[in-house]
Length: 463
Image 1 (cartoon, rainbow, N blue to C red):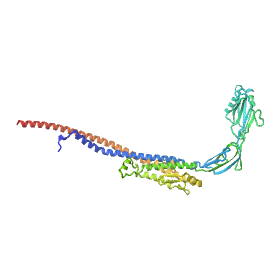
Image 2 (image 1 turned 120 degrees about the vertical axis):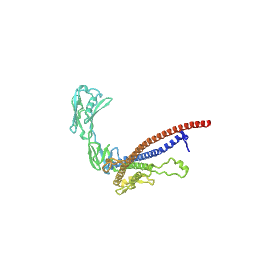
Image 3 (image 1 turned 90 degrees about the horizontal axis):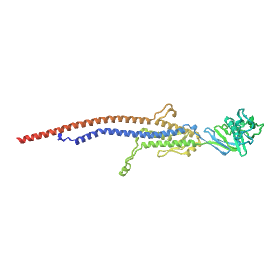
Image 4 (image 1 turned 90 degrees about the vertical axis):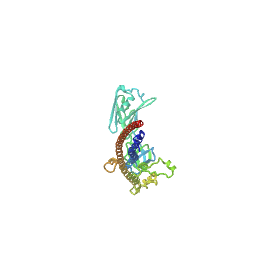
């Protein structure tokens, strides 16, 4: 049986340590729960990021009508080039007898250098365009050089541009209409030193007509056309033809799946990444039967979301969006979208192009349906504003709801840990104080007993 004298600091410390360990056990369990919850939040974060990337890629197939599905070619790009919008009708067009639209150009007789003073005194120059518009410049006697004449004309920024062509024997003033076509012909009248630059089709004076302003002419599939410039943007709906030179050219517009195919391929890639992210966070890693295998896979762990219905259901929905996809009598597989035996999305651009060539309308409808399905799944997972949905109202994703719930749980557990820590600290402090008092009393009792022993021993020997 223990006596008072059996108490010691060592025994007290051991007993306090035992109590402290018992008090820390629930706190440790709560801290483990926080670690688990944080792992779940991280897992949802990885999935959310992958779904967000998928959502971004979907914007490229949202509006099929804006995706260029036309290929435009020219047999002779030195004569004509062609650009077709995605609404352009397919067809082949023969362009013959192409003659380009030209601007009017005149040049003066050879004069002194560009900086030499012109003779004749101060004067004005009036330029009148074929449409009746006119512009006038005036130069004083101190500004009468070819350089100043050209600068004054160009400062008007009107229907005529001026330049200086210099040679070893002198310089010429060159005037060119800003636009092409017969309507951009012009005449010049001047006074003083500027009278020498006067020109009209009836009286050229000292000016030389280098090029006459003319309209572009050609025949399109035998139909004669004229244009004031070298760009035909209304002859064929949705088609712009740029004339580059005289001659002939055959231009064609055909259906092209290239742009749409590239966008669908990008969606398939991001869809695969999303499915892979979910698979990683929900994976199962079983224990190995052999000790060597166990040691090599000691760091392997199952995914934090293993067994989570929401995560597994999200993966199934993403895969089903492809496996069950069909529209206008065509299936996803026929358009090059399939699911492999390993659960990956596969996109075959050759099969897609073939299906598009046979029935572009059906393929476009199929892609639109794929967008609608995946966009709704993404919105349900990560949330979306109303302007990205086919239905009204915004959606708060379930991933955010799960994450918020976990964060609330962590906050509650941390508060509980704080409370338990304070209680444990108070308990240990009170226990240490009680042991200290007990040890002090035990020490006093030992001293008293020693004195009694001495006293009792002395009394016995006297007798």
